[in-house]
Length: 246
Image (cartoon, rainbow, N blue to C red; front, side, top):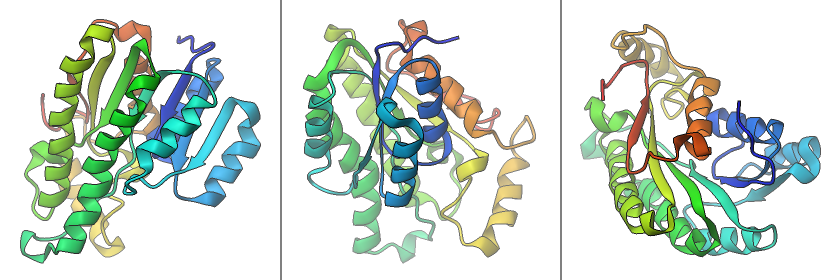
C-alpha cells in the first residue's frame, strides 16, 4: 500500500507498541528508520534484527540535550522525510497528589522533549516532510486522576497546531494522532490492581466495544507519514473506536 523507498523516518518511543509496529512496517515498505527508546536491550535486539535498515538510539526525551542528540544522529544518515514524536510517559494520580517532581517528570518528557526535538530537527527535515505528534484521548475524556497527563498531551497538541502553521511555507505537514485505548500500551501507567476495572470503565464507553490494536494505530500513522495525506495538516486524527467522537 505504501512506498517508503529511499525515505528516512525518525520515530521516538518506538521500542514497543504502535511506534514499533510502524517502524517495522516502514522497513517492510522499503524505508529506513531511526528509532529511540530507553531500553538498551530492546534497542540492541532491533539493531540485530533489522541491520542497516534501522538506527536504534538510546535517547531520553526529558534530557535538555534530547534534540541535539537526535539532530547529530540524523545528520549522519541524511535528511528526514518523516518525524513521529511518540515518546511519552503517563502518571496516574489525584490532582492533590501531584508534586513538583512528578509534574517535572511528566512535562519534561511529554512537552519539553517534543518542543526541543522539533526545534533541533527542523533544519534536518526535507520540504514536504510529515510530522506526527502523539496526543491522547485523555485530553477529552475528563477522567479522574489523569489531569496532569491530559494537560501535558493537551499542551503538545496545541504546539502541533502552531508548528503546522509555521512549517506550512515549506510544505511540511504537522498532524496529531489521538489514540484511545490501544491494547499494547493501554493504561500501562496504572497499577496492576487498578487496570482491569479502569479498562472496563473506558471500554464500556467505546462505541466499537473494544480496544484497538497497535497495528490499527500504526496504520493511521503510516497514512499521515505518506504522501497519501498530502492535503492534511494541523488536524487531530482520533484512533479510539469512537470514544471521543471528534
